[in-house]
Structures are given as C-alpha cells and as structure tokens.
Length: 259
Image (tube, rainbow, N blue to C red; front, side, top):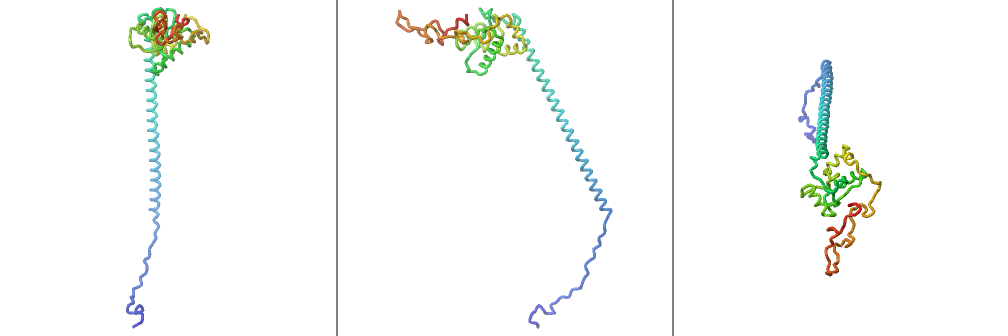
C-alpha cells in the first residue's frame, strides 16, 4: 500500500464526461413588441388617468369656488338684511323722536338747551365709552351742552329718574329742548344718517376752543363756604354743622355753566 492513502487508485471515482447543455437563444420579436405596446398602452392609460384626475380636481376646485362664492353672496345678503333691519329700527326710533307721542318724557326748565346726563367714572367700561362718544359727537356741532355728571352730584340722578319715571336708568341720556331723545345707540344712528344736525338746528354756535373761565368746563367748583370740607362752624352754638350750600362731594355747580 501507498504511504499516502489519498493516492490509492482504488479510491478514485471515474465519472462519465457529460457535455454541457446547449441553450438556444431565440429573439421573440412579437413578445417584445407586445411588451412595448403594453408599456405604451400603460403609459397612455396612466396619462389618461392623470388627465382625468386633473379634470376631476379642477371640477372639485370649481365646486368649492362656487360654494365659497355662494357663501360670500349669502353672507353679503345677510349683512345687507341686518343693515336694513338696523336702518328700519333706527328709522322707527327717529319717527318716535320726531313725534310728540313718541317722546312722552320731558325735562322741565330745559326748553332752550341740550342736556346730557352722563358719568365720568370708569367703573363700567362700556358705559364710560358710550358717555365719552356721545359727548364728543355733540361737541362736534360746536354748541353749548349742559352736561350733568351724575357721579358728581346725586341730584342729577334723581332728576333723570323723575324725568324717565324709572329707578334704574342707563347712561348716557340726551334731552333736546326738554324732549327726550335717547341713549348712545340712538345718538350714534342719528349722527350717521345726518338727522342729528337737523335736530340741533337753531342753537347758537360757540367759539372754537371756548372753555369756561370759572370751572374749566368741569361744571363744578369747590364750595366757597366750606372749601369742600362739607362742614361749617356755627358760632352761635359753637359746633360744626353740615354745609347746606354744597353737595355730598363738597362741590357746587358752576354759576356760569348751570345758570
């Protein structure tokens, strides 16, 4: 035996030689053309589908645009209807103002002036803004306004309650020639439609920048008897008594403005 068993011929295996199979390559032209046609058809179908999608998108966008246009038209129509209803309400209020039956509330001793009841306190923001707006509108006509601040004198509030016949009254309130006109909403509407100037015709005009020299248009001044302390000394009794000349705030009405 051989020293190396790997070279033993008895262990060798003789395999039959086999030729590799021959593969025939045949070019199938019909298949390639059909594939190309199929690809072109697919591309055409995809392009057609994309164009169809584009058309559908345009249609949908058009629908939304028409809906938005219709909604805007409807919105404008509702706004016009609201404005017309407000105008009708304002006209009805104006008719009430013009007729004597529509203004049953009258203010005595005010036939020659425009009286405004308001407040200068800022506790309620809406009320303060309405009072400021009405005062500015009336001052724009350059006529003298009898402004009565209910926060400075409680007698003004009592006067307004007696004139309107109500305990709970809102501010501001306007009277022209003793006739009751209304509050902030009515004055704004009359000013917007141009009727407020007609109502205020006949009042004398004031000079531009006119300011009262006595009170600086505050309508009040400190009491001359008690200097605003609301107390006076009674020499006969030797006691301090309540001053009868001023109001609860130690103020008196300006003699030039409130005469």
